[in-house]
Image (cartoon, rainbow, N blue to C red; front, top):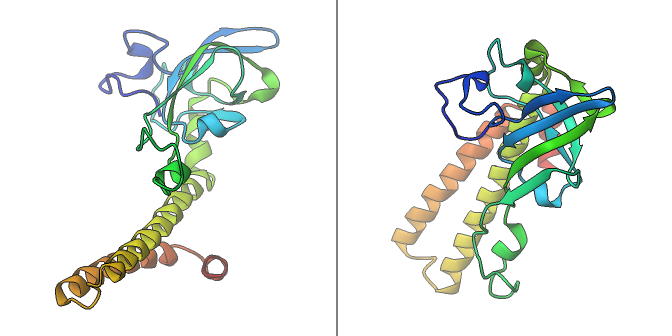
Length: 208
């Protein structure tokens, strides 16, 4: 996604043409990219960045209608990570979750980054840039992995809540049982919605 800037204007009418990540120069061996994108989850742990745009683009936005791969260590690539949830998570005993499972979302800045043609899959094509998400399974698969992640986290969280009430001896309390039942219902609803969208063979794979 492009940065949170003036969404009332298309990319090419922004105050600065390099606010969105786009082409600023073409060379014989490739193109030069400048601008910013968000949110690169796990960018600091990755080897490559896939740069494209799922945000709707309009005629005139061709410089931003690209799909390409850029090494994280390419000259001009800068990652600005968000602050971790636990700034002092310096050991796994005191911070068993945040020290292990924090997601390192990043704001990515491209400062005149050169991309060779062999790493460019779509170039200045509005229709292809949109079609890659909606005429292929890409968008569905991307959303699916996010929902699987959420269901897994919900399962973990309700298990953690159950363990906590057992440790303090309140698991048999009617009020606690009502609250735990409501949580279990919410988790089951979300899991049911996830399973409902899968084909039969995917359901078997997911459940095993």
